[in-house]
Structure formats: structure tokens, C-alpha cells
Image (cartoon, rainbow, N blue to C red):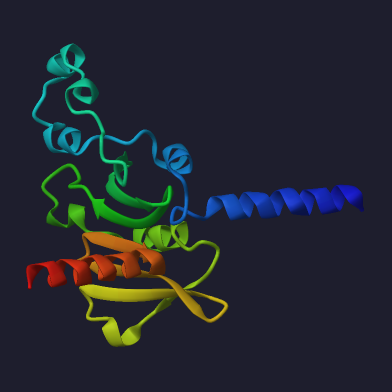
Length: 183
């Protein structure tokens, strides 16, 4: 019986670890996506030849200095992560242009949409807001104990945005503060 309970515990830990992304720390995200890259590195990745890249380290030329935002390249995606108090509170996932002349190469497949929703589910189930579903725009809410804890949008089939309710509230506070300063 003890072996069975230990096996169930390990399985639950593995299942819990398979979900996340939102509310993960930078160390956890690095394990998931690899080391973060600088914004300039993302912009100039294709400008430098392999020979130039060997000679000039972009990380030395363009160090990561923003303490609240990180950029990751993972498979065929660019992920922009915003942190509050050391945890991921917003993630924007953009599909990078694929190879070949396929104009749909930058479009998320249904499987990719499901994968990113699952990755950012925090163990809960996303609820599609059917009133916001226009085909090219979709909106989901994530609830826990009846409270909205996160939202996700899917825009023009090429990027998804995930944010916690804390991140949305901080954006509203920043916007209110900025509008008062402008007056």
C-alpha cells in the first residue's frame, strides 16, 4: 500500500510540474524554454553570419538588463515574459515564420493553441468566452474557486497573450497613473 501511495504522489508531482508557465520563476522558465535572449539578439539573429557570431558574442554586446521582462526562443516560438515579484505574470507567445513559402507558416495550429493553453493553465481549465470569439480573436478566462485568476487572448492566429489578474490590475494602475500625469 505504501508503494502505491508513493507512486501516486510521484505521479501527482509530475502532473503538476507538467503545467505552469504563468507564475513560474525565471529559473523554472529557463528549464522550460532555455536561457533568455536579449531583445537585440532576437532582432539581429539573422543579420550576423555564423562566422561573425563566433567572433562577436551578442550577449556581451547586448546584455540582458531589464529585470522585469525576458525573451525566450523555444522551438518555433518567441516568448516575451513579464515578471512581478519574481514570477511570470504575463506571457506573449508569437509563432515565428517557418521555412518555405507557406504563408500560413506563422499561423498557430489548433494543437499549438491547445498546447499553450495547457502550458499556462496553472492546473485549472480555460473557459472560452464565446461572445468574444470572432474567428481571428478568441478570449479565455481561467478561474479558481470562482475567482478569475488569468485571461488569455488569441489574435490574428499568430500570437497568444496570457496574463494573471495581478498583471492586468498593475497595467490598469499604471495607465491611471499615466493619465493623471498627462492632465
